Length: 288
Image 1 (cartoon, rainbow, N blue to C red):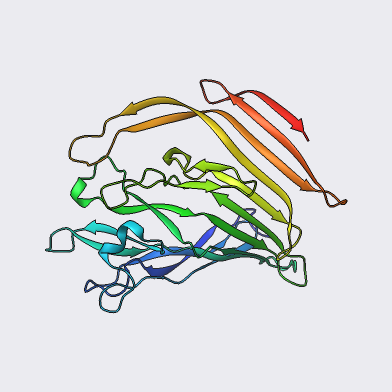
Image 2 (image 1 turned 60 degrees about the horizontal axis):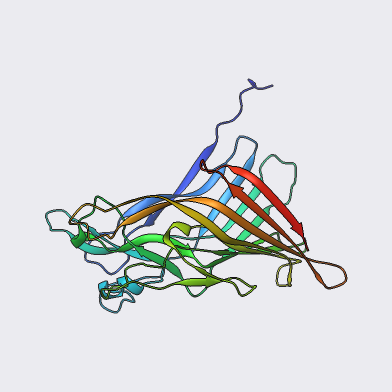
């Protein structure tokens, strides 16, 4: 039976308040994906962490907190109806769990993935938009978490765990006091890296655990990287921004450490060399 057509992929949404509670302005609801029904018969459900912030009387965030805010909310200027531009706070929702279930009737066990974020919180970078006036510029660029822990599976089945460390490009950011921040990040081997703006989003290190709550048996450390500057520009007057530069990757190193049955670690180092077009021109692999 059937007409041979593949079922359409369906997206279900949940309306969630973008505006941090405590303002005199009305709520601002926007849709976020809560479930995806795929053409192959899977149901992917997404759960989100609740908002962390409240503003106004008795709230835990004020405009003065913008330069040092690490919670899942951010300030932004906007113009409410019939009002001048003013700063308000808006929620940023993080995913807590993704569950993939079998809707075909085959009886496959659901796959559950949980995400855990560190108490050090979110990095928010000063707005770098070239079109923004300096008087409406604030710390509203999401730069993520230093680490994210991911566990996959459900007991009694095996539960796997990985932890990723990220660079967030926070060195040189406006500190809110007329100066800039100096930010560096260390990997588990003790090497320190300047958290340069152009490194935002780079995975510094990945640790794979033998089981959730256990100990790492594979560690991958990326870096250091070598970049060549490819250009620079002075932002338009009135933006309040400093000179900006662009970079292209020239050399990258990855060290992979595996725990052997003997209890010792085996290390291999891979180095990639890039040409002027950003393509790999040569690669070296050096076992320990």
